[in-house]
Length: 320
Figure 1 (cartoon, helix red, strand yellow):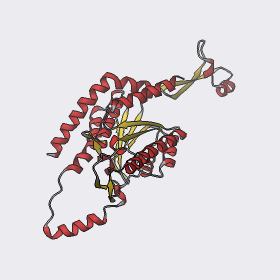
Figure 2 (figure 1 turned 120 degrees about the vertical axis):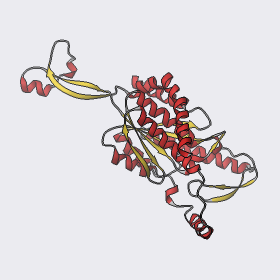
Figure 3 (figure 1 turned 60 degrees about the horizontal axis):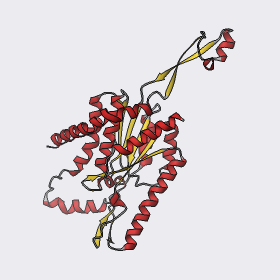
Figure 4 (figure 1 turned 180 degrees about the horizontal axis):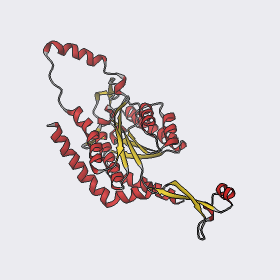
């Protein structure tokens, strides 16, 4: 049942995002990420008409004849999707979770890279690296990447098998004891450490997360020096405004901690909005100071719009 449901969802994602890639995404991706690198090919004798700026003065001095360096455009890129699968991504309103928005975003990027004959890989993470798929080319490989991101969400939603009655009380105590276990929390630093180990050459790395984590800026700076790093912040409008519903019990998806909150209190509403706004502003300022691009994706809105806006911004910047 799970395999059939998963295959159906992969087809739906491909159908929806594939049309967007064919219509608008592939061209925008190509203009931003293709043809930016130049790879040295050879040194050859100068012939009339060659650009004098390419003269290799060391070889010219050694041989007594003018020689030039010849470069070819580096056409193939490696794209790595680093996708957060921690429990906080399960939150969502208006019929779609942040995880579902992350899946659609990952599919758009993966299919765009495949359409342009680039390699695409996947790293799923939460408290540590959870699943790694090395970058490869091809439509079938892109389907594997999409399926792996989808599988985590579906897998967590499937019912758990019933335990024997004699074990239920013991298992209940174990769950309560491990509710705030470290592997539930997000660790962007651990994910980027893994990226450094698995990628030997420069790549375009998309970090897709809600960035509910701390102490990861140094890891982002380090990764950006080696790769073209792009951070994608997945948010939901309800993270800044609570529905006034009186006194309710809320749980932290990352730690499992629960507390009672008066959602009808104006002070609570303001505190939540201020906290969420400050966290996003701090992230934006920190990334800007490090020269790292940031894409903001609202899970309640179309995913393709902010991605296209980012591509167009990068294209304008390249033309300057």
